[in-house]
Image (cartoon, rainbow, N blue to C red):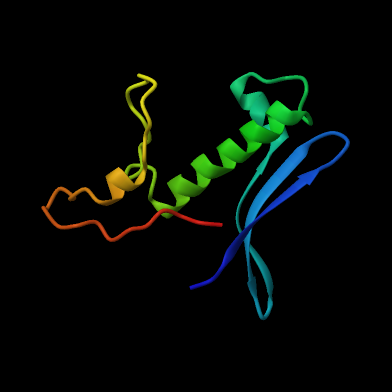
Length: 108
């Protein structure tokens, strides 16, 4: 199983985040996100500050979960009640067929 790493580059105009793995033939980029992608969601200014870096990483995570097919399995906290939420509670749950899920969270 390949080991993945998170690469973050902050330039003078934008923030770039990537998930990559190394192979003998070179690095393979699994998914990438750019702070200029945030303009699709209404953010038009400040594409290189701290909050843009956070949102770029968040967008990268959402895209990666969709690409790996984990977005429906790890839905996150659905009720915003201030209580602690542990993603491993979803991992230990049984799937629709009554079998234990063997998919683990993506780690980089």
